[in-house]
Image (cartoon, rainbow, N blue to C red):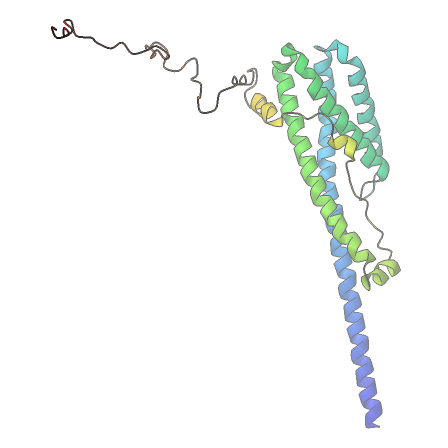
Length: 252
């Protein structure tokens, strides 16, 4: 009789332990899944902001860079395609959405590089503001992508690891998709975001010109440094003051 009671106590404790572990594992997967979905929503906000900026950027560039017609048409098409996929998107990105956003990012980078050939456009206040806002949005998208992918990696590892994979399978915790950029997008022409931010912060003014090449250890002086003051003359030998009556050689 005592043995049966001990067996029942052990069985009850074992059941309580299994149930407790199951509840803990389930809640842990829920927290990880919610974190993945929340981090994706943060990216989605920035992507929608980019959808709003691109049409204004395209119209501004069109007035100055008529030769970029094909590039502008491609950006408009890719923007509309990505926005259409976003309207039917779930809690995490699909492979088609990730590819569309990747192509759109590459097209925008190419446009920002090509406009360097149009000085009038680069001095346009509206364009500078749009360029700065778009550059900041791209930076936030890149940062959000890294955070999202880190959360996806942790969540997917849990769903695939034993014994939590049994909980994930029984309660239909599906793997989350990464939001990745392939090697082609990583090697696309770069944009000087530091220069963009400078020009955006001071609309209507050009960014400072690059300094000329300098020899090591010989810094150059700005042209407007102490204007109106007499500058020292470098490179001229000092004139030595000779005595008026030099000594005569001794008589032999």
